[in-house]
Image (cartoon, rainbow, N blue to C red):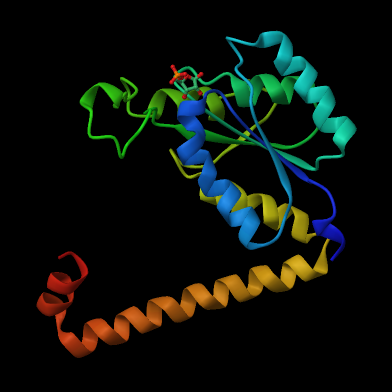
Length: 191
Ligand code: RP5
């Protein structure tokens, strides 16, 4: 299929500590066989690289950039200021390793991601970034596909099927809940 030949989406994140969350976007794109290029670009630690990346994204022919950052998240907005490509921002409730048993590896943002959400969504007039919810990188992936689907009919079909699958999965769960009763269902689901 034509849309699988070269990366059409650039996924960038401010730090390796964002990678676990940003991987949700990659997983969605992989599921739909959309190639993406992934990089770490920090607005405050590598500002010159940020400008270079915006040029690179245009030269590569990317159609969308998905940018995730935590804290005072400048990456999505600054990238948007350097390019005409649409930027989808993912606000990140910063942490380093959620699975880690060592508490010193847990690093939450003081404002639980609200800092990042506002930094991304409240871009002043003239340089917009669309923002998904906090840590909702998967939604950024789906939204990117919706934009691409305007151009690629195969993708449109796949997205329609994705919606039908969601519908069926809820029906299946509802049937099982109805059959078992709420108490048993909850015991089983959350054991
Ligand atoms: C932001 O600072 C990054 O996007 C990350 O979410 C946050 C913390 O980065 P590290 O200190 O974990 O590298 O720039």
